[in-house]
Length: 411
Image 1 (tube, helix red, strand yellow):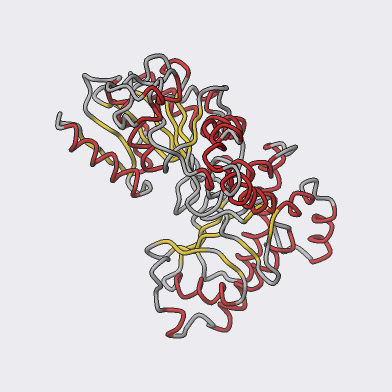
Image 2 (cartoon, one colour; image 1 turned 135 degrees about the horizontal axis):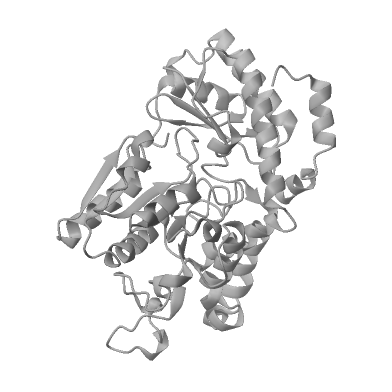
């Protein structure tokens, strides 16, 4: 897309069928928020729900609220809402713990289903926690398991007969490159292996079809595109064919078939509830539950369509305003998620200069500027203005100061 005029941008916003969804969020004045792929903006309803949970349910209901407010079933209630967004059947998704812990649990289950194989296959550049967990689990099992990493372009050819699990992230957190989930899962099954997908940069961003792709296992977080708040609980998915007799190694009391029987021996809960471990964070779970109402009445195909249009406007404008930035996210919508990433040797300082101007994106090592395209609350005028701010920062070298080059604890 070539340069877009302000009048055309105004037309796009005026005709946006998702424009009403922006009113569901709290967005500070003077800020263009392009970091929803790292921490989603706060839905207005979530704040009210947290207040109710704290003041009414905890403050007045006290321990009775485990029953009267149905705290005990929140992991399944919220899981059902997420299931709709990721193409999963009812009863196959539970919300619990963090993405890291859920990955440990489902990876352990997957390896137990392929006891004669020892290779966990993933790609170089996958999100570090996924690789750390896989490596740590392999060491813990002590059975000669191996985490095998290959360059991204070589994944398909590396799915050999010794692979137990192919563990991939659908959308790469640095580049925004999107994997062919259905195609790679089919190749995985043809080789006799199992698939495990990390949906951290997929769930809530565009339509995901776990059932249609015949995926075996999946995990994802609640605080990015699902807008559940900082540290929101994560989710895990298990295909229906593996639910019977499901057992994972973190055998905590709320994963027991009868947790309040306080039996001395562990008996896994039937189905997806076996992935539960300990007492859930009720406040965080309630915030995520309410945050998901921001998707009410939203067709995910419309979400994706708007994301692609926003992406085209943003990237084309950045290309014209700041040609020094090198785009690394595929231009083909079929090959990308809903973020736009660029390389520059001074990426960190550039991002700090942008944030100082009210354009919030983020930085990833070693040299990547990353911008999240979140159609529920972004307008066309937002990405258009953001591109111009990028151009101004580059043209004036506003980033070239000691203040912007000094790295904070969280980058």
